[in-house]
Image (tube, rainbow, N blue to C red; front, top):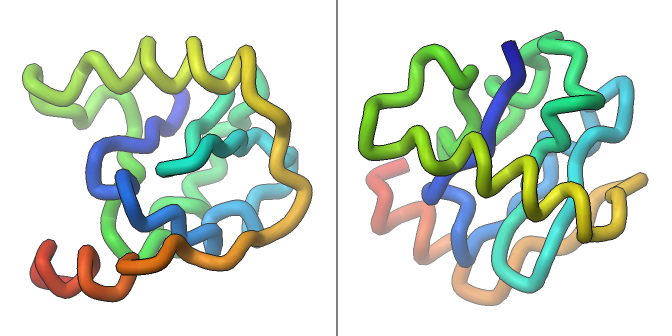
Amino acid sequence: MAYVVTDNCVDCRFTQCVAVCPVQCFHADETMVYIDPDNCIDCAGCVEACPVGAIDDEFNLPDDQRYWIEKNRERAAILPRLTGTMDPLPGAEARKAALGL
């Protein structure tokens, strides 16, 4: 099992998840972060660290969110690995509020 970043991360890119990851399995683009499933050790630390509830294990994903499994794999393979936190994107707090969090 691997953990997966889903659409709640889009336009937020909070990176508290990166700070708690013991194996640096996160990658980022201009809108969000992704988990490399081949490096994820299933520690679940990132789940509680994410302020927008964007991370779940692949077995808990509802059918309409399962495409994120492959999306994380594909994007992590081509994006640079994050080794530290980044500033959230402009508007991230507003997006978090819109999500009711």
